[in-house]
Length: 122
Image (cartoon, rainbow, N blue to C red; front, side):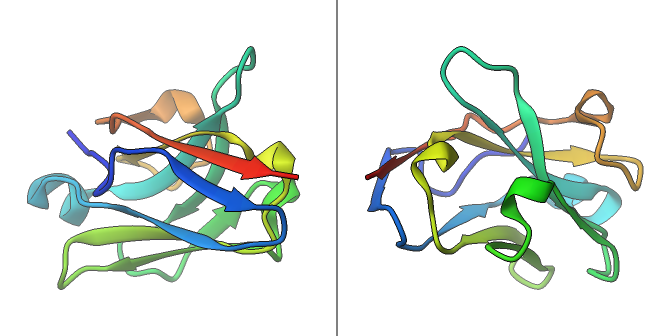
């Protein structure tokens, strides 16, 4: 299973930045693509970003392109989501997860983390 490094709520003003971290099990991190997802109140969980084992393949949902960057540090067994120029619409619970495929499809990810609440104030 994967879990965020920090489980508490993250608060930031619109236009600000923050970085989320996730440390999955060693086997999950090495063997799987890693992704970030989010779920806003009253909405379905949606794909945000994904990265391959080597880092050579990345994908982003259109709403975060140019603002968010996914990365991973295999030596530290950690995946990151750098979020810049945050908007109130980015407010959601953010989850990391692993997949055995190069995919953006939520259904193909597993080993979900507990999630981190990100709240962006206007």
